Image (tube, rainbow, N blue to C red; front, side):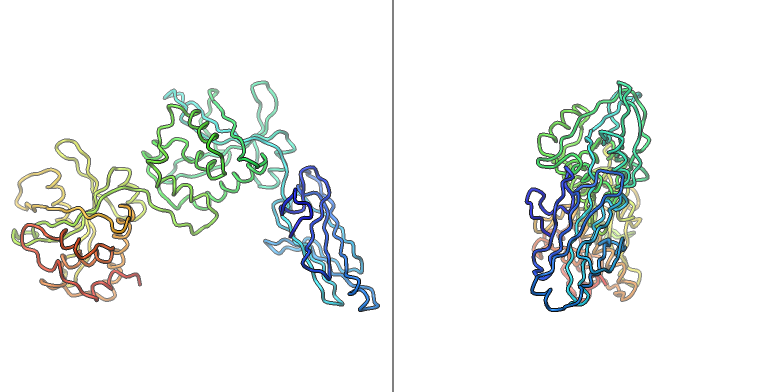
Length: 499
């Protein structure tokens, strides 16, 4: 579809000033199809459009009969036929109703006798005026502006009605400080049941103490196009809002992050972004660079893919560790320890992977969050998360105490390979361990003391995770008796593959 007037680009049939505009397909030289009508629909009434078919003169002379034209107007997305008619006429009139707004219609003319066809298509766009506001509401208890939302305020009832008809979203009628009628909708990101959700016209904490900041559209974008972009992104987010869990503490440290990310995704420029920062002032406690991984995930959730891959947001470190054998003070048991940076990271990890974390407090009141992975002799080489003795060895290391089962834990940090970040490394390790647990049910490996044991298993997992042989030899060098830490087996390696 091409427009003869470059001013309108390739947006479709409709223009702001409702001037007629022709859309045609120049590639078909035998049949030239032209549709005229307003480019943007800013009325609540049906609007008339006209399609005109021009047949090449050489083709006209092939037959002496009247030409027979089959006209079809249908929806591109649903294939719903709005109108269909067969006649000898080269002119075809049809109406576009408000219910067709935001649909792409296809106008087709088929010359039945000569079996020649041409079609054009265009998206019917709504046209209305309004502005976008970033609004903060004061919490009466804390006396700070800690509730944030986006407000879309329409310039008239007519604009609000056109918007409602286009998006099936009810608007709110109210009064401004001068008792003038206003029409608007709100968008808000809020925490509920472990997720950051989005809602239109959510009942927020009512307060007369509010402050608002007008957000200008990106360069070259009209106000209604900016609003259309915001609505599309918000609808996308609602499809993806259960993709990444988040804990309440984390949400409270990132006020207005949802609203800010939505506006960023909609294309606001740096000046508008800085205005939001100044507007929030001391209430802005997050740092976009520091929380880059979270913002990347949140930014992705406004995309239109329902199968979007969201990166988990947590921080931690990985250790290759040994402890004394359970009940036997001679010989080392090998395990992997994942230590999380904070409660926030541990909680996000647990919600994503459904694996519990362990919490322990040191004598200095330092908080520790961790989990363990290892294999054990249960006739087969059995993989377990957070085995009792492994947890006890970590607790003794965090809070040293003499007991009958003193495990003498020793741990070496293992750094991610090939510029991989720690959270990606942790994800890889968990995926490999889960793969092994799935495979051990189908093709279990018999436990042996010198080869297929806990040390060999940890070595094999780190090998599959990308750790080099030299690095694995360094990290597996512990005090005491180690057996199997250098053993390699294709059979064991294959157990970490996804089936």
